[in-house]
Length: 113
Image 1 (cartoon, rainbow, N blue to C red):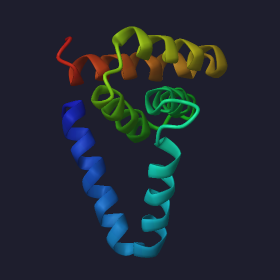
Image 2 (tube, rainbow, N blue to C red; image 1 turned 45 degrees about the vertical axis):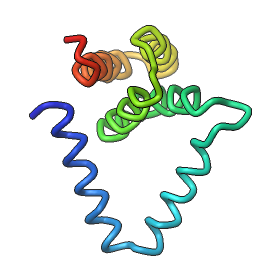
Image 3 (cartoon, rainbow, N blue to C red; image 1 turned 90 degrees about the vertical axis):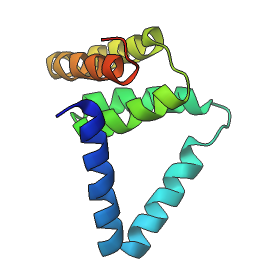
């Protein structure tokens, strides 16, 4: 399964959850859109922060979701790599493993394999 396939699977699961928890998920997605809007921090900066947290929390679906958004926002491999480095220093060994996976996924999603 490719990372693009995994992103699609995650979206399907989110839609299914949204059907089961209509009110809750509507509120969650509204909050998420508001949080990631441009503000004092750019949307891309917020997504880079979220990527670092997702790596530290070892949330593979979160990592892929934020990578997909970062690709859409024009993030560079260097920006993603630097966010991964901050996550590694904060998350230790497990962040190294998830950081490597995140960079591989970014490369696949941007055609840099």
